[in-house]
Image 1 (tube, rainbow, N blue to C red):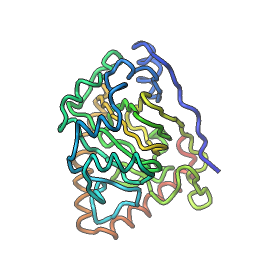
Image 2: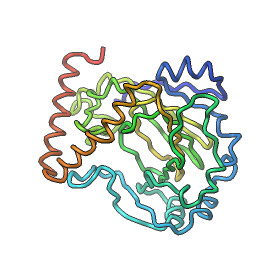
Image 3: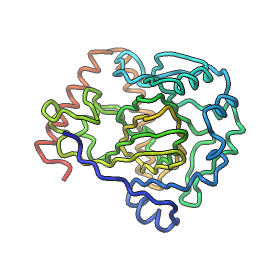
Image 4: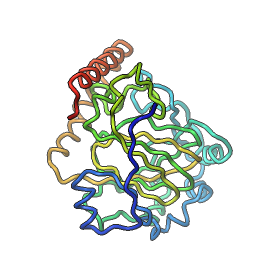
Length: 293
């Protein structure tokens, strides 16, 4: 059995008024097909072009293995020259990903190749937004972004499978306490509802991104991503107007993160085991009480 997934809304173009009313204020994901077609990046950002402009910078690589409780959540498993990594993901499947690496810092001319969609909303954050690269078959584990930004995620040079969940389902998704990711012991594509009963009945949204497609993910949305081809994406982030969201973001980035890192460094596997048991307990409680309503 699989999750109950609905198809994401998809438009070629959208007006500011329509976007604000039906997606931004409604906290509803959307794919915009044409948003990047007026970017220089739409034609320029091939694998070979990225190799040329970034070159032999050493980059950290991440895999799909379950997080080591003794290490930070974003601990790399290997390093490689950027150009060699691009050759690797062009040549064969691999679960190695480049996560939260900023090639634009090393190739600032890339700043001229994309345009933040300020015609749709304000509050954009990054001077140097992150790019994400993955080999065919690599997976980004289920999580929501710690800063609670709205995200415009534009994909290049291949296809990506995305599954999204509203934050209201967090307990039923077995959210790990003091973190922004879920228990990593179940398969998002084929969940075992007998072993993880709280997952049954959870409703999500499914999307498939192709070259140039832009996915709008509202603040707090859980997302899981699978690279169907060796490819890459850029995420442009924007603040929500809500001060409650901003305060929660600040809490996540300071108090929660520091507490979690302290506990990991001092109690390691014991702390992680406690968190996983608490995630299961909360999931079962939410299921028994039929939450969310």
